[in-house]
Length: 96
Image 1 (cartoon, rainbow, N blue to C red):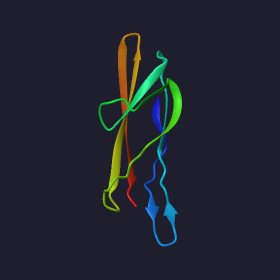
Image 2 (image 1 turned 180 degrees about the vertical axis):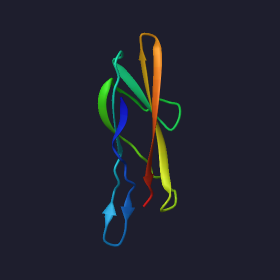
Image 3 (image 1 turned 90 degrees about the horizontal axis):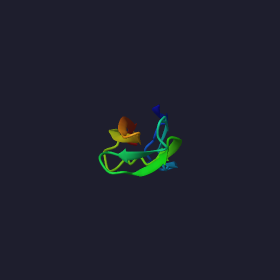
C-alpha cells in the first residue's frame, strides 16, 4: 500500500491572512523488506524509512503563477530478497 494520507496546500498571504502551507502526508506498508526509500521528482534518494510508516514530506509550490497547479511525484522503492519494487504517486496542489 502506498497512498496520500494528507493533501498538501500551497502557502498564501494577503492583507489580513498569512498561511504557511501544508506538506504532503504519505503512508505505506510494504511486506518482505525492512526499509524503503523515497525519491522526489526524479532519481536520488530523499530518505530511508521503515517498511510501514506515515511521513510528512516537502511539497514545494515554487515560483509558479497564482492559480496554476504544482505537481510533484514521489517514488517509493522497496528491495527485498533481491527484488526491487517501485511505486509512484503524483500529487498536485493549487498555487495561491
